[in-house]
Length: 74
Image 1 (cartoon, rainbow, N blue to C red):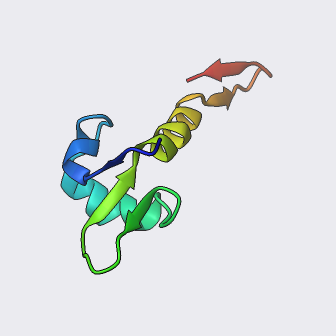
Image 2: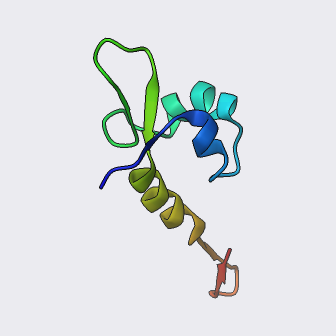
Protein backbone atom coordinates (compact mmCIF):
# COMPACT_ATOMS: atom_id res chain seq x y z
CA UNK A 1 0.00 0.00 0.00
CA UNK A 2 1.30 3.44 -0.93
CA UNK A 3 0.82 6.32 1.48
CA UNK A 4 0.48 9.72 -0.18
CA UNK A 5 0.77 12.86 1.92
CA UNK A 6 1.09 16.59 1.50
CA UNK A 7 4.14 18.54 2.62
CA UNK A 8 2.46 19.66 5.87
CA UNK A 9 1.85 16.06 6.93
CA UNK A 10 5.31 14.98 5.79
CA UNK A 11 6.79 17.79 7.91
CA UNK A 12 5.38 16.11 11.02
CA UNK A 13 7.37 12.94 10.24
CA UNK A 14 10.73 14.35 9.14
CA UNK A 15 12.61 17.28 10.73
CA UNK A 16 11.83 19.86 8.02
CA UNK A 17 9.13 22.48 7.60
CA UNK A 18 6.55 22.14 4.82
CA UNK A 19 7.81 25.19 2.96
CA UNK A 20 11.40 23.87 2.97
CA UNK A 21 10.16 20.51 1.67
CA UNK A 22 8.32 22.14 -1.25
CA UNK A 23 10.93 24.79 -2.06
CA UNK A 24 14.22 22.96 -1.56
CA UNK A 25 13.92 19.20 -1.09
CA UNK A 26 11.40 18.69 -3.90
CA UNK A 27 13.78 19.94 -6.57
CA UNK A 28 17.14 18.88 -5.14
CA UNK A 29 16.69 15.73 -3.04
CA UNK A 30 13.38 14.11 -3.92
CA UNK A 31 12.85 12.65 -7.38
CA UNK A 32 9.54 13.05 -9.19
CA UNK A 33 7.97 9.65 -9.75
CA UNK A 34 10.00 8.10 -6.93
CA UNK A 35 9.50 10.37 -3.92
CA UNK A 36 6.57 12.49 -5.11
CA UNK A 37 3.93 12.66 -7.83
CA UNK A 38 1.78 15.29 -9.44
CA UNK A 39 -1.65 13.99 -10.35
CA UNK A 40 -3.00 14.94 -13.79
CA UNK A 41 -5.11 18.09 -13.75
CA UNK A 42 -3.82 19.15 -10.34
CA UNK A 43 -0.97 21.38 -9.18
CA UNK A 44 -0.87 19.60 -5.83
CA UNK A 45 2.23 17.58 -5.04
CA UNK A 46 1.78 14.37 -3.07
CA UNK A 47 4.79 12.78 -1.39
CA UNK A 48 5.19 9.01 -1.18
CA UNK A 49 5.98 8.15 2.43
CA UNK A 50 7.42 4.67 1.86
CA UNK A 51 10.02 5.90 -0.65
CA UNK A 52 11.03 8.84 1.53
CA UNK A 53 11.19 6.67 4.64
CA UNK A 54 13.40 4.10 2.91
CA UNK A 55 15.83 6.71 1.57
CA UNK A 56 15.77 8.75 4.78
CA UNK A 57 16.70 5.70 6.86
CA UNK A 58 19.59 4.95 4.48
CA UNK A 59 20.98 8.45 5.01
CA UNK A 60 20.90 8.23 8.80
CA UNK A 61 23.22 5.20 8.81
CA UNK A 62 26.41 7.08 7.98
CA UNK A 63 29.92 5.82 8.58
CA UNK A 64 32.58 8.52 8.83
CA UNK A 65 36.16 7.39 8.19
CA UNK A 66 38.62 8.39 10.92
CA UNK A 67 42.30 9.31 10.52
CA UNK A 68 43.45 6.26 12.53
CA UNK A 69 41.66 3.88 10.16
CA UNK A 70 38.57 3.40 12.31
CA UNK A 71 35.00 4.32 11.53
CA UNK A 72 32.64 6.64 13.39
CA UNK A 73 28.98 5.59 13.16
CA UNK A 74 27.32 9.01 12.99
